[in-house]
Amino acid sequence: MRMRSSTARKNTRPVRKTLALACLLIPTTTYSADIATERRQELLYLLKHDCGSCHGMTRKGGLGPALLSSILAAKSDETLATIILDGVPGTPMPPWRPFINPDEAKWLVQVLRQRKDNQ
Ligand code: HEC
Image (cartoon, rainbow, N blue to C red):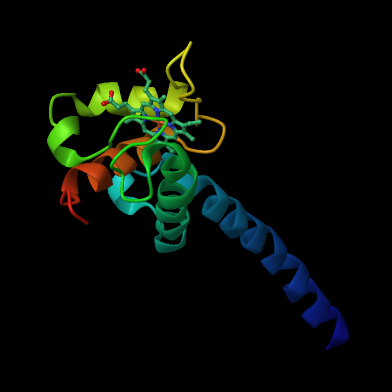
């Protein structure tokens, strides 16, 4: 009995490891719409507090320009996502690539676009 149960336990380990690995890999390969709820909350917090420290907590501008949807409409998703990821050299806009992946940057652009200017 004891031997059988220890064999059974051994056999489940590789499966568990594979599942854990799969869970780690999924977030980096999914599209923006699939960003986990928890990560979205982190990104929204970052947008308000970190981006907000320069762009204003209500995105009306400060050290950085206003990030209101009416203003961003002039630029493409690609341009804005690239600015977020790589920053604007020679200006205070820093690169966020170490903290935000390309899908997350695109998602943030959509968040900014969907917000009304007075929210
Ligand atoms: C240290 C200050 C600072 C922080 C923090 C900061 N930015 Fe910026 N950002 C700037 C400045 C300054 C510019 C204007 C750069 C230029 O002159 O082109 C800018 C430009 C931008 C632009 C382009 C706007 C446009 O109309 O061309 C976007 C989009 C943007 N930032 C998003 C973000 C996001 C998202 C975050 C947070 C993840 C962030 N920024 C954090 C200073 C900052």
